[in-house]
Image (cartoon, rainbow over all chains, first blue to last red; front, side):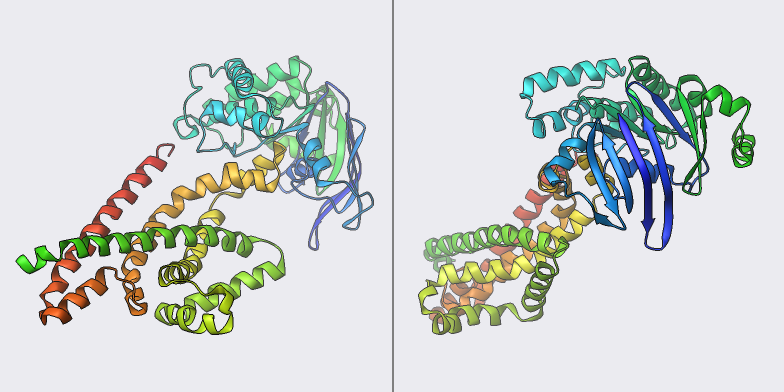
Length: 250
Length: 215
């Protein structure tokens, strides 16, 4: 579903990603853990073009999203094509980024109506269903400012799902939440995983990674240090840096 | 008092003229200001330079001089563009306020969290769709207070075009003063300006409340 080959990303002289290779198959849930500054978020942001990679190749569902070397495109991909591939990849942000001038329902309907040209009443019906699924059936007409952080993040998940993405990327989706609101968001994500959504989740929630992930990736200093099943990585980490990190967070 | 009453129709017409000048000019100014603001924000160095120069010239020279330039000098340079005093006045006021409004609009757009644009892109929106549906609607709320301010300034600045012969409020006061030799006429005209600015202050307050519902 997602193939990343030799991804490098530099901001000026700062090397953030130093050669990442990763394949995620359909229906797989991959959790990415690691210390802050290890490049986890940047990796996610590169997948859907919020950041452009310096070198490497990104493929989504067999289609090339980006192929570059030293900041130059090896393959010209039209802006239109990039946007349509972006729409296949749902993204959930740490800070929700809901549209504050729209109600929960309008937030969820916006992209299907404006980008996919779904008729309004159909989009509204689907949006309503999505909001009910994330447990917000009674908050449909509320503006984001009237919702708690956990509720906002659930609207954001529904908004991403409304585009019927093939993959969902989660960039520390619970890091900005009060501790008592984390559970409701993780529950929704767990539900998605059970429905075989392909997911890449950057997270500090080790419990979630242990329970839900098919595979856990430990990143440090722009590289993948270790990857394996959650049982293996949490009970028997191979690499010294993984051990040191896990001993700090567990 | 009777003399004032006798001039009521003239004052009424002049009030209409001041309002027409203000509203046409602010519309011209907003539209052009939006284009200039987008130019200022764009990454294109030519657009950036052009809009910067525009704002530099129109903010850096007196408005009265710009009005004179358009009215007296432009017809000599480009006779084909010669038009009447009202159109010239609206263009001059519009061009000038566009420079100020451009900066107001730019600041409002740039004040919107960049996460909004990222979320739009992640949902497959292109930049112009994201601007139209997500960024600009949110910036309207933020630009309302300074735009209201600019509107009031513009309303008062319309008095400058009395210098090219348009009979708006200040001109009517001057005319009545010179025909009667009594400067008292400035007083009711000042009151009319005050009434107009009060009304529009109120209107902008209402608009701000209307656009604040989601906060």
